[in-house]
Structures are given as structure tokens and as C-alpha cells.
Amino acid sequence: MRFRRSTVLVATLAVLASGCGVASRAQDADGGTAPGVGSNPPSGPVGPIPAGLEKFYEQKPDWERCGSNQQCATIEVPLDYKKPTGQTIELRARKVLAKDRGGRIGTLFINPGGPGASGQDFAAQVPMLFGSPLLRKFDIIGWDPRGVGESTPVKCLDTAQLDAMIAADGTPDTPAEVADVEKQSKAFAAACTQRAGALLPHVNTKDAARDIDVLRGIVGDSQLYYLGMSYGTYLGATYAELFPKNVGRLVLDGAVDPAITSQQMGMAQAKGFDKALDAFAEDCAQRSCKLGGSKNEVLAKVDKLIKDSDAHPLPGDGQRQVTQALVVLGMVYPLYLKEFWPRLEDAVVDGLAGNGARLLALADEYTDRKPSGYSDNANEAQIAVNCSDRPDVTSIAQLQAEVPEYKAASPRFGEFIAWSSASCINWPVKPTDKPHPIKAAGSKPIMVLGTTRDPATPYEWAVGLAHQLENGVLVTRDGDGHTAYLSGNPCVKNVVESYLVQGNTPAADIKC
Image 1 (tube, one colour):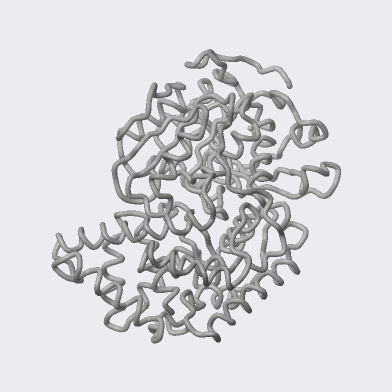
Image 2 (cartoon, one colour):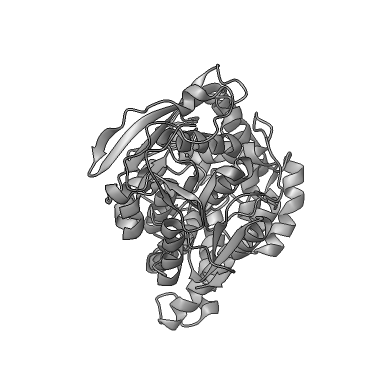
């Protein structure tokens, strides 16, 4: 999940930075069946089809080559699942074909998080990221969820407007600055209503999870194989809640706790980034880095840069100034991946010297800002999904009342995260859900991964989700950074791949 900001809630992967017969079946390790093993994909949907949705489950997408061993297609789904004969929208998907066609297990669906991140882009990187057992045994499909990317998108602002929104004051401390936050929130909501009004009520996570079941049916798998990261864990858990009997093997990596409120989520994430920054500062000091010889010295310089940039933005790329908001985003992004810590060190050093170019470059990577503009609509889609999913603050007065608690939780990031809630104050669509535990009663075992020093999805969220699920098993990675499977930890890699390929579920929670 992305770091909470007026344009984003909580974080995508830093490495980017689902009833007809089956041709043949093989016995699954847990006594079930794995459709399609030793065969080509089934010719039609497998399993129950919700009434009225037959035409969607039975459609045959035109898969066209779009890369080495890859195919792309457009899939049709209902805009409103309560009105399946009404308006439809499109989902764009990319498939990486299993290398072992004769031993193919089925289709592994993947989601990189966000919300708002492109599953197509994630799938394009799969050959370089995933272990060979998954590449051999599964077709792997990443799709842009409804509202995202090349699927029917939520698009609200042009580049200049989005630049202004992302760079806006994240810690308003005068009446005029507070008024500007509310003005901006109203303007953003109005723009989204004007340009994407019909779509906004239907980009929530429950509808996105229903889309997954259509995809599962289209590829002919009787049960879902899924690997979701960050926000993708909430999407996967929601699927398990809606379709527990259709759960095959689900890996939820960098888990979100569905039972906590937006406020609890924001404060936990603020603490998480503080903890990650502490780890960076300690590591930097031990290396005798450019920021100082002690952890406290490093943190003091970081704090000075954040504080000074509020009143005095830094020069950036010759066209844009680096405001405090961009400084913070430029610092947060490298905390997702320990390998990026040297970039953070250099960016802070430059910032203290009056040059914000490196910080701006990091913030741009985080928000998908290219020299020509934003490469996708991830920032807008994220707000649309988050504001639709769960209640948040409903007024500026309520937000201001919560700021002290945020600051107490995280003096460095708390206030900034609190004010990110302003995006939902004037949102035109009421939330479709509320925080609650997800049990997915009756499902097969679901694997939940948590990393002990994950800044974006704190470890306790994984513990919470794993314990809520009726059949959850927790895999703990002791380490830094966001998510576990792609971290290079061989223990995690082996556990995940053994579960997805062989169906080997650990008998109890394990630590890696």
C-alpha cells in the first residue's frame, strides 16, 4: 500500500521499483484437484457461475501476442454487478505463458498493490522476478483492475493539475493553508465527478474481487491461484470472503489488516516509516556515511531538511520546485527497498546543500511522473478506490482534531499522513464497506506473508489478517523493506513456491 498522501493511501511495490468439464485433472497435494495439469487450458468456465453473469464467464478473449511468450487481451465485465445487463467496462490483461505446457497447473493471477498499480506492467516483469517453478507451471496473468491504467480508467486531472496536487502543502499550519487544502479537495472531487462520474461508484475492492472470479472462470480454473502484494492482499482477502469455496491457493504478501480503521492504518504506517528511517539512519551511521557518524546525527539532518523545505522549497528540475511534500515523498520511496538506501543518502545530502533534483527524481519515480507527464492514472485511481472502500474523516474540523494523535504516533511523518485524509472529505461516493475481520470460512488454507520492518504494511497487519482468516497461515520474514517474496529471502521463496506449485501448506506459522 502506498504512503498516505493527498494523492495516495498506502504503497505499490518498490521493485516496479478465475460448469464445464476439464480435459484432464491431476491430484492436488491437499486432496483436491488441479485443473489443466498435463493439458491445454480448458475450453470453458469451470465451477458455478452467478446467475445473470453467464455471458461474462463464458466469453472467449482474443489473446494476441504482446511480447516474448506473452499474450494480451481485453475482457468485458459489468460496470454494476447488480445490473449485469447494463453498461459494461473493459479490463486489460497480460498473460505470461507457462514454460512447461504439458505440466501446466493452471493460471496464477497476480496483483502488485496500490491500489492503482498496473498488473499488466507487473506481469511484463514476471520473467525477471519470479522463481522458475512458478514460471514453468503456471500461466501468469496480471491485469489492470477496474479504474486503473489501460482498463476503463478513472482519470480526473491533467499533468499540471496533478503536479500541483502532489506538491501541495502536506502540513498546513495557517488558516489560509488549511482553506487551500479544502479547496483542492473539492476541486479534485468535482473533476473526477465530471470526467469519471459513472465509474466512481464501481471501483471499490469488492467489485474488483468479483472481476477476479470472472477471470478465473474465463481461464477455466475451478479454483483461484493468486499472489497479491500490499493492497493486493486486501483484494485477495476480499475475494476469499466473497468466494471462499473458489479459493485454491492464495498468497497474500505484505498484508493489509481489513479490521482496522483508516485512522489506525495511517498511524501504523507513520510509525512504520519512522521505524524504517531509523533503520536507514543506523545503517548509514555504521557505514560512516555522508550524513554523519551517529544515528541521531543522521536523523537530525533529515529532520532539518523536512522542516526547512516547508518554508523554503528547493530548486528541482528547472521547472518545478521541490516542496516539503515532494521532499517527504522522495525520502519515503527509498525506504521501501533497502537497496535504495544509498540513493536516499545522496538525495538528502544534496537537499541540505540546496539542490532538490535527486529528491524530485525519487518522488517522481514514486508517483510515476515522467518528463512528459504521468505514465498512468495510479494516483487518481488510488484515491477513488480508497475513498470508496472505507470511511475516513468527513470534515476539516475532524481532521484537525486527529492531527495531535498522528503527531504523537510519528513526529516526523504523522501530520503529513493525517492531512492526506483530506482527499476523501468531499468525495462524491459514499464508502461501500467498513473495517471488519475477514474469516473466509470454508476456504482452503491461505498463506499470509509479513516482514518485520515493513514500513508500508507494518508486520502487525499480517499477524492480524492471518489470525482472522479461518484457515490462515503466517509466514514471517525478519528483514527490512516492503513485501517478502521478491526480497531475495530463500526461505520465503521456497515456502511460497512449494505452496503454490505442490500445495504444501505449513502445518503452523513459520519464520524465515
